[in-house]
Image 1 (cartoon, rainbow, N blue to C red):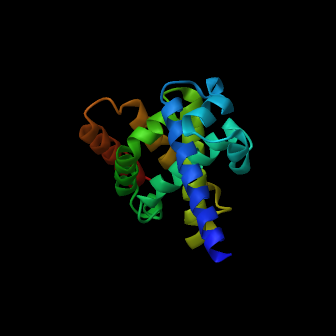
Image 2 (image 1 turned 90 degrees about the horizontal axis):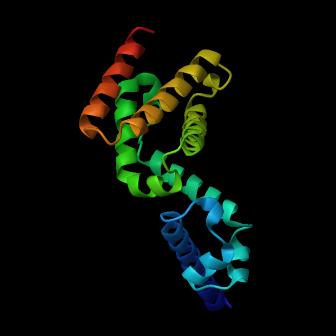
Length: 185
């Protein structure tokens, strides 16, 4: 019984990995709206029932992978509190995390205003969630919320807008600007 459970669990992991890889490959070539479950299942070499055992539809899968990517990105930022204590360092870490995770983010969040908004909103929500664990008093503090939102949304949007330029220079200008703004507040 335990062996059957272990084998079933391993198949589940393999199925999810296959679904993820097939989706990313398809998503790198097509708009989300153009990907069908049938096409994904053929690419992943699974039955539709296997797909539906894990996800409701393509949008559910996309949402799951977006959230997973955000979690990985935030994990590259060792201390989210830096957004409050050292905003320039936080901006550098955030940009560096994007570089590290870049390829997947370019596929899941292509260069368009809708995707950028989804990305920045999800990232802001996740980082605030972590900050509020250590600083619950910030949750209802309008000034802190606005500051955190501005730093996250502004850093990410600006970095993504200028990511094709000299990346190191963009990060330094962004971090220096945020540092100066923070010093004046």
